[in-house]
Image: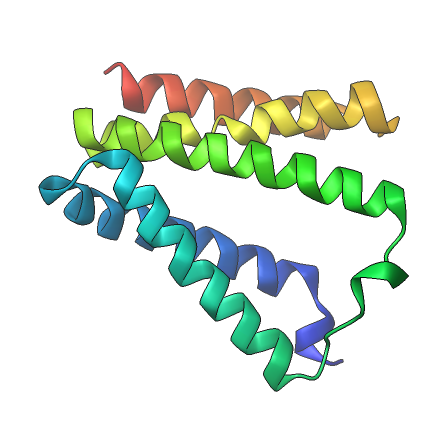
Length: 143
């Protein structure tokens, strides 16, 4: 099987880089305003994403992208930006060992939102796992 087609590989990569982001972000916001730090991070991400799209020849004319796709990507971008602004401010004010677990409550929020708005099925495993994430975040952040 082609490993690049496995969602699990990409999800573990996402988790690893998110963990690295917490460490590097905490070090980075030590000497600058958290909003400026978020701007710098965003510019770097923009350059990296552009380089990947160009290198892989995945560019597509904007007028070929549907209106609903644009709407949801713009809203997702706004949510991401707000998340990053909150995250960097939290890192500036608190220890990474407490901020990162609370940030991972996004897993529980995503489960609830997926069930409520996307009609995803809530299995006992998903509910139990989401509960464990919630409990773990609470234990780590408020221990």
